Length: 329
Image (cartoon, rainbow, N blue to C red; front, side, top):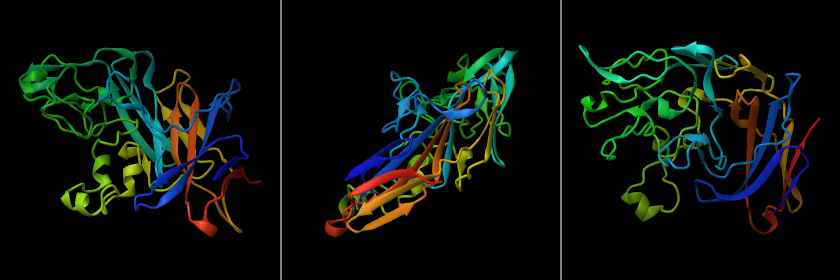
């Protein structure tokens, strides 16, 4: 099987095993745009490649959060929005409100300066924040975490802070700095869903729960295939607040507040005019794939759009001979 890429985008075609065990070819197409000096979004001079694995923020922290998610998967549900960057203020502040808007969809966050847990009349509480100008929006700064001996952990975000065997163990340790405005973290006993804009790792909840049930029945009847109760939502990498049920069309406005020294980040989703053909002996299948991942780096002024098409490999006369990536007028 050959791949012909007649576009200016990055493309790859990879053999893969679908959840039902069928052998398929996943065609991944990525277009990277960047803002030029005139403020216009144009194709990037150095486009991002298709990523075949997760890239962590810190390779020396295997339990840490993901900077760039893997692009390799079978079909996804809707569209993931992933924002990579920091909360940035032009002057020192103790609190900064962030907002990601994609069309009518909104995802707010609040970011605080460094703060610690302390003993208060109400119990172990979150202290006042110090001033800051920049705080990375990563899950290490959100509620979650694990004990030093790994004896307890928040499986929604093991990279975070705020989890310990005893509440008093948290006194004088860093407290969460990133939270949803509707769920303020005030006491060490508060238990809120981790807040953020980054990608979620495969073994974190709730994402892991969509992989299905790996029990004795699975081992005896289905292994190494995925369980029968596998849910395609497992392939969605975005924070639940940034998983869109439908792919936003070209021209949809995107705005991000509080994550760029240049002020609000604004753009519209470009029209890739993308079409992918699958050629077999004497036949051709064609799709216009939807964008299922939009990755934005506001401070860098970069936007990645990822689309995919999944084709069965077939056999004999139905064998997949060529995948052609093209654009239409």
